[in-house]
Length: 141
Image 1 (cartoon, helix red, strand yellow):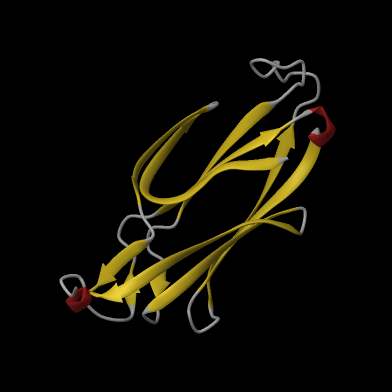
Image 2 (cartoon, rainbow, N blue to C red):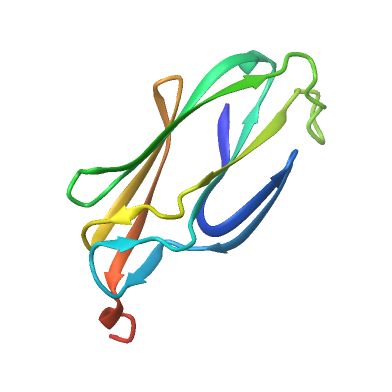
């Protein structure tokens, strides 16, 4: 299994294997700390093949600059066997799974880098960083 898309965005919609992403970002500004994220989603598209069939656990953890856990969610997923269509130009079977995690309302407790760690069956598969800066830094050069 591999991660095809991993992004933080304002919102996303997953309809089967179709994924719509609005407003991908890595930097956001806050008037003060603590700051509640008003619109935020983690969007993932995983590519899998026949060897990945079965039940798996996806875990998403968001950790603040100070090491505090801001969010944690575990989700069981079932990857079907024998239903993946052939990938264009190959005879290898592959299919995708789109996942959207609503992070609205997470409270960031300090300015700086925040980490999003994604694991599959307790094995890290992706890390994203996003940065929260003071509103006053928005216009600095």
